[in-house]
Image (cartoon, rainbow, N blue to C red; front, side, top):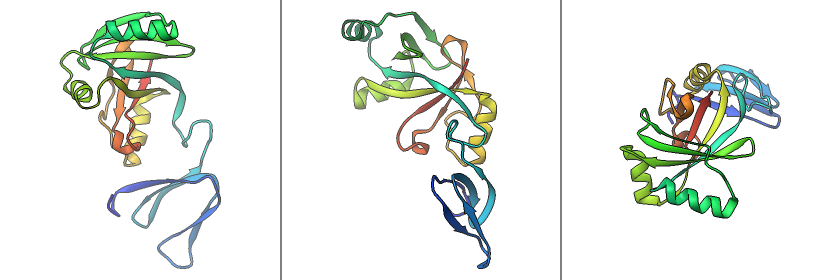
Length: 186
């Protein structure tokens, strides 16, 4: 990341961030700072319940598991965890077949590529396994706009229609330390 790209600093303890002038500093306790180079663009309180100043995160909606065959994967999960399949659909916008297995307030989503090269490549290099974590948010368009102002790398800059007709958008794994995050708004 270059000095000209905005960067977000989140702190859970008191620290002093020096500004460009030697006699000025910004004292932050449990807060965030959005900085570009040595210029502070924005600063404010950190809220533990949302993890950000404005983003409303409701819950983990599901974890998605990439599989070569939904039928085979479902039988294994049903035998091991006793889960039921409640919905199965082809998601044209993502070129996958998806099946949802409820698990408490969340679920396990099995995804099988149906022309989706990224999921097919994932399976070819890593085999079946955890593909992404889906987080339910409120106001997905505003969340995406906020993430863009923070310099977060996005796969989708605008939501598209995903499984169950929900609005979805993906955050690039490089932005999260290697985890593909799907933002979901029912």
